[in-house]
Image 1 (cartoon, helix red, strand yellow):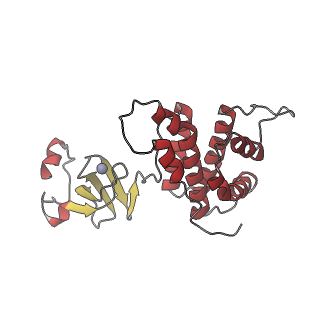
Image 2 (tube, protein in one colour; image 1 turned 120 degrees about the vertical axis):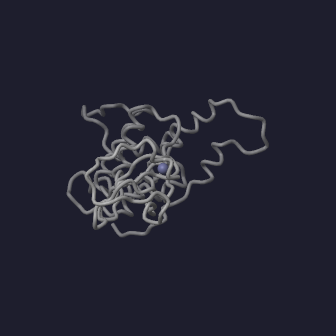
Image 3 (cartoon, rainbow, N blue to C red; image 1 turned 30 degrees about the vertical axis):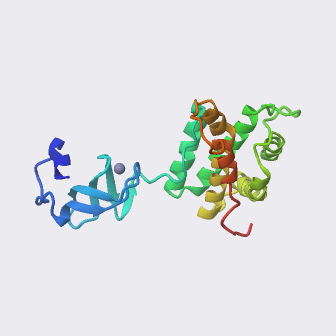
Length: 227
Ligand SMILES: [Zn+2]
């Protein structure tokens, strides 16, 4: 794996060298892209507060400062078939969660819910000439069947978390942000991924359709917290 370093240019004023293949040349650090947890040490400060690392699997670079890895890992997944603007917003939610920016994650997730509701037929302006509010968006998503019966336990929690994120500066917990984001992820799967998968040519199989498995995998919130 030391061969991975053959393309390196190194600034030459240095304290010492790290021998490739020695125990010093490896570090347990999780790659934000591929998730593997073994990295090659390219350089480090002495004492070791800052490490410049390279994932031993995908070869990409990461930096570890005081045991925090940058860029941060992104939780949850990217559903397939997302429109470009939704994909960008969802990526922002995941990035926010990855660095513990819980309030920002919830605010962007809320915007995504409004965007999806309008994309699925909710008028962009209501009778008062205003953009629909969060409750109107949720009601519309329920009417359209994009919020399924099994997702209902999530809805009230998300409504409360979303509202407090907008009007106040509360400390939104990681668990709250995680619930909102998980709900949003499931909504995006139902709204975009199923149609995308169904539009792909499929092989003859006895397996139930992918969409069925998606719905069957929906789970209620796993965390309990008091609003
Ligand atoms: Zn990697």
